[in-house]
Length: 280
Ligand SMILES: [Zn+2]
Image (cartoon, rainbow, N blue to C red; front, side, top):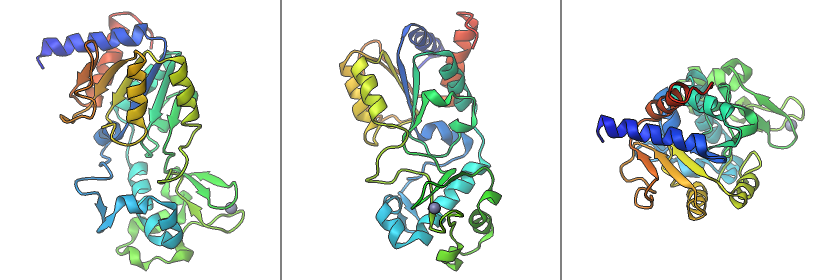
């Protein structure tokens, strides 16, 4: 894509943002990769020879909480060490400005939660790591530093995770039972009121869907995008993947940016500010 075409597409996306009353922005791992957080599935979907998919299940947690907590504890430590990037902040600004905005967040790293993104316009459908909760009672804790959870501090200095036993894992101060990471595992209900909120949005009609940094290969995001498209929504994809799920399904007028989210989202925000004088 030439620079002139680039600028053209940025302007077209800015124009769509301006004229679309209802916007859903679905984000995934590509939003947080520039913050240094690797895609979990990585190149082979393994962690210490374990299939990551098999670690993300309530059954596995019940059978082997030490291994599952060690995996999520490492991810939580990485998230706490990372910072929101320019794409997270641009998204927060857009969501604050646009009254008809909803961000559907598939990431569990909590980085969007650390920006000024309005909470009422953010659905983190897979939960997030920082919100650790009890497996039995209503107790939960928002983890801001590794000191909030002594297990994390131990994990950060451990040379061998097999040194941990059940008693080292985080336990509930209210009822003494095991705490768990606040993420949604396979077979569990999506968090934050989804999918009910999204179903009702789809029924009311969505004017624009932006899919930023997501392959749309994980259920059910792709279905939502196809339904919105069938009902007339414009689609804008921002992703580095050439073989993107949607690339053959785009209509004239839809947009595909094969670019980093930290380039596209701030650029579109700047255009809205400078060209249309919108105070965001
Ligand atoms: Zn409890």
